[in-house]
Image (cartoon, rainbow, N blue to C red; front, side, top):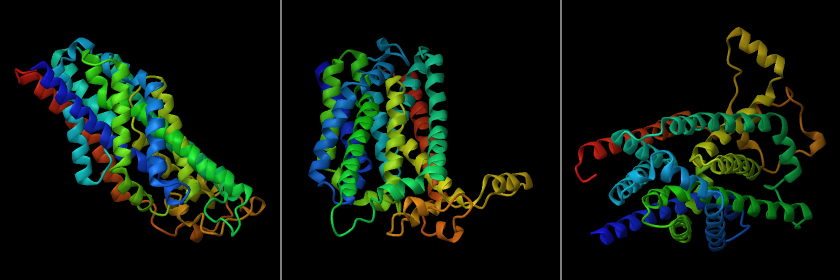
Length: 378
């Protein structure tokens, strides 16, 4: 019975890691593959290696948190561990049906919290710390990228000019190529650091497997997803980002990966998808805000008027019209009409994403509580 249940747990863990690899590879290496810098096969190999590296190093902290600090590890019987992983797998399935990337970290924590409430062993202080970071990190992502979008982005776009290469490959373009791949590897490292725990932390907490075996299993499962279903994600990620130019994609990846790597080092399970989305919104908002000077923004706020900004602003960058650094318009001199082309930001789609991000861990926590409270098996 024990061996059969362990095999089920390992199968569910592989399923979770497989889906993580399928979705994270597109996010990490979509810009590199879309620009023709590397092949899908190379992207999958890099994803596997750097995700495993992230899980083996920084990711251990997150495994320790989810495997024994939210609730005591003694609560992770093998049956309970399989049930927690089952909730994560269901969340992935539901998110795929709705076409929205669910936060596996938040869903897994929700299921563990449900177990803790049902058994009366939830560490409320630790849970409060995690939830606090869940609230702070998206706000932090938004404002960092908003500042970059308002004050630095046009200059970065002019310096890099990654979207409009000339007929001859210049040194700048070679540096840009290396930069695109390096940032993809960093994103893969961050994804591994934050996500290996989602696949194996309950099994590690139960003592059924060691942390080394768990990280290796999760890393290989992520790699399996990268080599298989990620091919489709890599094909569509450019469309999913609508008209987001390569420079903007790189900024979003660096900031979101840095935030998640920092949280993983603290042992905080957090969502890479949430941080990346808030980076996109913040960067677009900041870019569009260059049409107004600080005094104009303050005057509009005192009148109670919105600044009339559009986060469509990034859509027109990187289309072969990027000015040289010395020609970048100053704040307040940007043409508003030039910053509202395209359809980068869909408020309805964003609302649906945010609702599901809140809903999936809530449902996971409630369902887990009911299962662990009322089913004799657990």
